[in-house]
Amino acid sequence: MKRVISILLCTFILVASILSASAEFIPHPGDTITLRCNHGVGDYIILDGHPRDGTVGLVPVPTVSGINWKVVDLGDGSVGIYCLGNIDGNRWLNGNTGAHSVNLAPNTTGKKYIGTHWKMVALSDGCIGFYCLGTDTAYRWLEGNSRFKLVGLASDTTNDPGTHWHVH
Image (cartoon, rainbow, N blue to C red):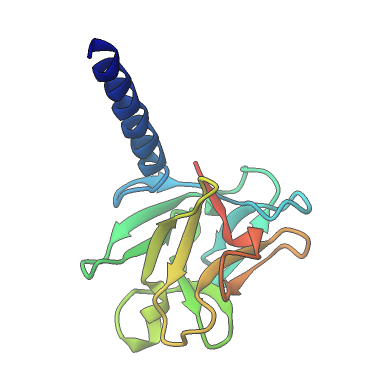
């Protein structure tokens, strides 16, 4: 009987530690993060915001200020991803679901900037997927393409490793 209880207790502790470990990967509002795409081809993997011109790209090394992002609770069950770069300009990560593109927006309000609202989803490989709540339903997942140094939106996460992000 003691052996059975001991095995059950060990199993419970193991399951609890796995669940808590996977939950640690999802950032919380207020956290400052750096995102690295899991594309696996090329060196350009770190998400970089350019507030001055409102664009987003990928860089190879964490030396520029646009690689730091703050997770912000937008009050509707979604989060905003705010670029902490030291240059003035647009700062909110914005998915344009109709054009499958990503840029930086000046704010998170109104229909024009609904793409600044995101859901973070734990993926099976321990990475995070960023799901855009924009209006078009086909392309919603934040995608980094390290070969071409581009950031856009993909239709799903199953066949595209660039939609899998490591959070640091």
